[in-house]
Image 1 (cartoon, helix red, strand yellow):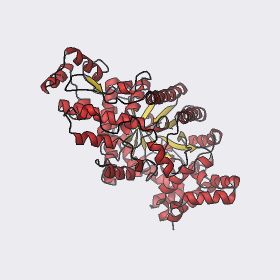
Image 2 (cartoon, rainbow, N blue to C red):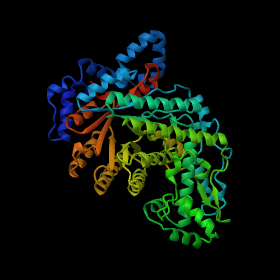
Image 3 (cartoon, rainbow, N blue to C red):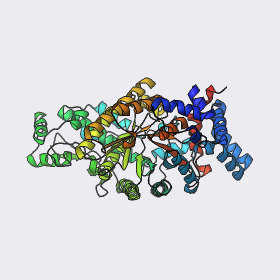
Image 4 (cartoon, rainbow, N blue to C red):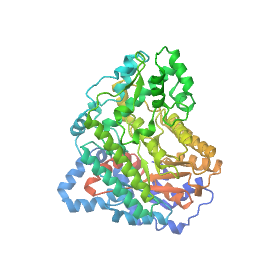
Length: 561
């Protein structure tokens, strides 16, 4: 642990002042203000908790130890001990009433709040794996035949894409090797309805406790069967590959350039595909969703259409018959109903948030879900970000394609004239992603090193700032969600270099509750827009969250004497 980190616990005032001096030449706080931001008990608790997190035996066996303590102490005493120690350090309270004083205390130091009801199902690995393969979407387990039979793309490539976006039981427990992120498991439509209701209640809590100045965080895997997201992601990947091969373009070229109807039809004819004018008109209708005379290849806007069936959304041209055929032709009515329910829940959450003046962040998840999650997030932005940034999508800088994905999404936002909202993180699934890629047989999606990820983070942020300059104020926003002091310094310096005032709120910052306070309070008192991510929920139900925080902080205490 570095000296700065140590002093953030033992001498918060000094460390915070040192960091602020490095990020802003005119900090606005006084030493007297800092004296009430942390009590002696807060400092001692932080010191003890982080010391314990550095004991490897305790961290590796934390769940067993907590189970034993629960039996030894009894429910009431166990709850009291945790609320005075680990839970008090990392969780803001059990109810919105308990969270409200924490929100108010942070606000006094110009730190705003992101509320997240952090209750998680505590199930075994075996149960998680069974839930992953339960009711696999569609009876077929092979790649889409219409693409395989086209001969445009070799069967190996089609199969590789299919395997990447297919459920694999050995990776069914998505909590494995994941420290920083929460996981939802599908337990039926009623359970998804309950998750939707929890998100709605969290939005109400944000509106009431922060006077609509805060945020709510949601995960799309909580609102429906995750296999649906897998299926959508695969169909997107297969469709993109098909049209890339058909037109001789890269996916980036397809999205970022402008290909007219006539140019596209000529490429179809050059490929030797026989299709009459009616069939070509039908094809054009499926790849030019906004009727602007240029092809779009994926009708990402209609994903939120609760009346449109999933099986109708992804169609490709059969080069033998010249007819459009669906990529998904084996969905049951139950599965179509589950998809409609998922879209309905998403719309419910977004509509409620907008009505309450609360913005929502859609969390990033594993790469095999992410194509669908990002398209759905963009569809929500397109609908709800006309006047301001109500919906933010999350981008993970540890991915090799992070910058190109942001580039494409900003292009779509610019073209459709909606606010581009982005939360930029390093990433939460690295070990799991690498193991799955090696086992299933596709390229590792993760950057090769910490340094490469840091460079990607800075490049993404720089590009977003450039987009803000091109589009003007009020059209682009980014949340720098990081505990890395170098990344935050770079962001502050980029703001200065581009004459972006903190009051403009183009760039805001966020850290977890109980962590990195020397950064959060310094930024807030220096006039920057900064948030604390406040988990809350019953003590017994936030134990998985506490377990992840212990694992995440196990190296923090190594510098303590």
